[in-house]
Length: 126
Image (cartoon, rainbow, N blue to C red; front, top):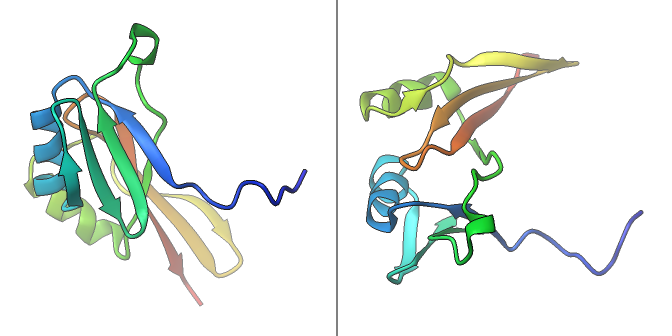
């Protein structure tokens, strides 16, 4: 069903255990722009999409987050750069789909709070 009510995703929330540690990871390691933070929350800009890191308000919100797929231009170079920053990767960059002249590559990693996140790159092969 198509709707005119929902226009776009405005924000994604990621539960964290330690706000200062998570700010360091997303700002200094991943390189996202910190917009502002409070004692319990931090807001980042990811090319127009707002990412909210927050201490859970209630116990039922304390679980792991959904996987965020961070788009990168060159997944091999991004993987090397972030691996040098001691990010824990769960695998190596690999092809997950081939569609006509496009290959979709992914690699998964853990953030500072134990959430699984990913890098994704679409490569045109001609």
